[in-house]
Image (cartoon, rainbow, N blue to C red):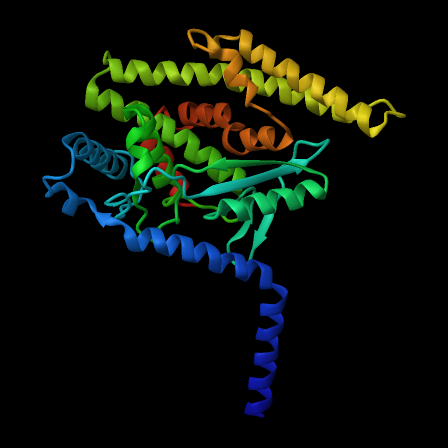
Length: 339
């Protein structure tokens, strides 16, 4: 009886492993990349005691430490040892994510992973593997995009390190990034990718505004510079939203007898119009070489679905924060933690 039970369980395990072979293979490759980062990360405290480390780098470490403390004590994000170690990328990117969407529909492609759930992106520590994944989806008729990642969260499972590329960011962008990732380690709803990312984006920006104001003052240049960057992003978001709506309308109302090439041409014309609107907008005002910047910018449905994943609910979340919590970000976060 016991032997038959053991044999049955072993058979079920083998079936499960065979069915999820691709996911397990991918998971092992990601685990290897993550392990390499964690293994080679050095405690910040150890680096702070070395005379060979530049004072400017040490100052960034102190700044990140103050952001962590503020996020945990003032904002109420979960305590952790995240960003107490440092990983030197040697000037090279180390992680890329692939996103995808149907050619004539703005809807994020979903990758499903055992236990972890569904995600609207897939990360790779190897660029060639990311390119291979994107190419495979292209052949299936999807728009794809590959983006370099400057930070990621292991959702509290491991000690997320400071990456050397983070040290090049401004005070505002760096504080937003740290709070964004600490939000992921505090609040995570399975299969709610869009909500998770929108929450992290919202709390990251609101938290950064409060942190910069408390640390540098409400009339400081640091805060003013960060707020100005957010205003520029509002223009980008507005124009992108208009373009997305135009594309949605086009895809729903293609001429009945339109050929594939005609559909692609109509799509191309709208995307070019979007780029020109960006060029003429305040988003690129006081920016040198605007046209050259746009030459390498090739938005597609994957690009717009990505914007939706991270930014679609920002106005709604702002309204909830003000109306339900009277602007109290910590109370807002505490209520989310109960989920």
